[in-house]
Length: 239
Image 1 (cartoon, rainbow, N blue to C red):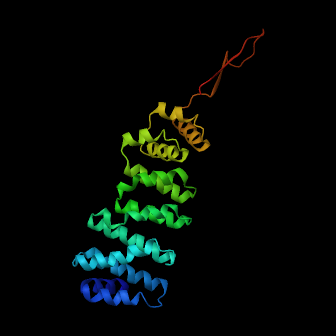
Image 2 (image 1 turned 90 degrees about the vertical axis):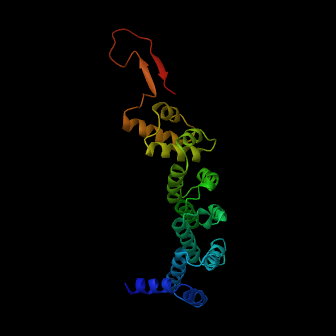
Image 3 (image 1 turned 45 degrees about the horizontal axis):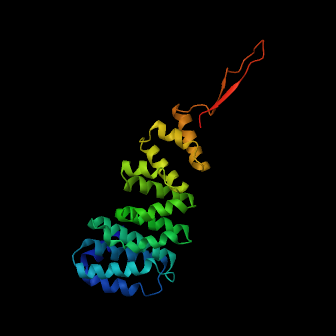
């Protein structure tokens, strides 16, 4: 409680607090202290009382997110703060578009945090970069967030079109999005069961089995049984 009270007091003092907190961040603080100071500055910026000074604070955070020399924890907090202020102000551009450069980071946590920041800030203009990420992402947590962002950022029409994307990772993302929204047509899912990508085909097959929409992959005519005489058997596939 005392930390919250102190934070509120710093926010109220606004301009008096800025320099003090920025100077403190130059000192050898524990990570908990650094996070507290950074978020207090973020709350001051979100308060919007001094636009020029607020912009200066946000530039400090923006300078950290792509700097490999900055501690990972500080980069993550900077992303979260920028996204928070962007959402609070209703201005997605507060989160730099360069955030998407982190989508190619070898660090899965940074990729995920950048994606979460884009989502929170409503940076819908970077949807093409999120689609590119879906095509190549291998981390399970980041993949899960990727298709949820695409589910949120794209229209039903766009989802239907991108369900046929050349990249299997993108097809998988949009199939998941459509199924989650109960917006996939039976014929669309039936077509996906023969997808060249095993993940896509397996997901389609699982959904069809659960919903009762599956058709046998192979049918025999006449059906199996005991016959007194030899019979000719015809096999038909549904794919």
